[in-house]
Amino acid sequence: MPVLLALVGLVRGTVGLVVLVMALGAVHGAIDTAMNTHAVTIERRLGRPILNGRHAAWSTSAVVASLATAALERAGIPFTPHLVATAALLMAGSLLLGLLLAETGTGDHARASSPASRRRGLRGGWGRQVVTLGLTGTALMVCEGAALGWSAIFLHDSRGASLGLAATAVTAYTGAQAVGRVIGDRLTLRHGPQVLFRAGSLLAACGLAMALLSPSPVAAIGGFAVAGAGASVLIPLAYSAVGQAKADTPEAATLISRFTTFTYAGTLFGPAVIGWAAELAGLTWTLTALIPVLCAVAFLSRLPSRPQL
Image 1 (tube, helix red, strand yellow):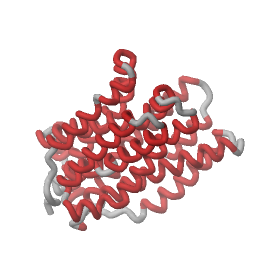
Image 2 (cartoon, rainbow, N blue to C red):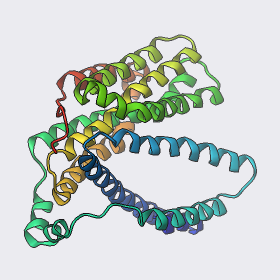
Image 3 (spheres, helix red, strand yellow):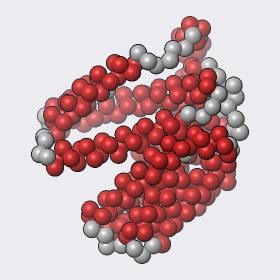
């Protein structure tokens, strides 16, 4: 992945850039599945929730990367050396951290490499629980894509905020999301995954309603922050629930890859669908329609009460 990232900065020409970005996205999707499978495996071994804390690292890195990119751009650093240097740091870090990842037993490797296991991996994993949670994940990622892709546009066009102020809505959402994930595992232990999932969904709905109803851009930004805090625990809890369906790593990897397909579908189509709907009904009404979606997720989703150790 770091090699592809460096090549994105070095390539010349539109066709080459498109090919490299597609390859980078494909590798990213495979690594995303592997990372969540690894985290679920460790969570099962420890017997306590850890997924929120792992996803907090992603949220934190998104904030750090965006701020670092803005600072380098302001300092006049060209994009090519920026990507190449970042790729070199990521390569060194991945080689170091790769040595620290947990290993599965030889029996798990044997089962994973057997022809029967490979056939199950390709054909299986579409059970009712995974599909139900997958559709939940799609809905959640559509809502998250709305906050990340359209909140700044909403503030600028509908609330008259300056471009600089409008852009802080995304920072407020992701920052609150990172904080919520840092404490999410402790909240899961205290209240249980189902209660926390329902509370988070309703809090996200309330935050979105606050953002849409507030005439002040500053108050609306606060609403997006509340929405980010509520949404922070939802995807990690869903990943944990999917991974609990099977204890063995090969089966868990299959289920999580299926779930990731659903979440990526929401990420891919969500912002575009919102844009098309906004052309017809207006952005405010389109974002308002996501509030009952979050409420439906809160009351219709069913998560396991405890890890199946």
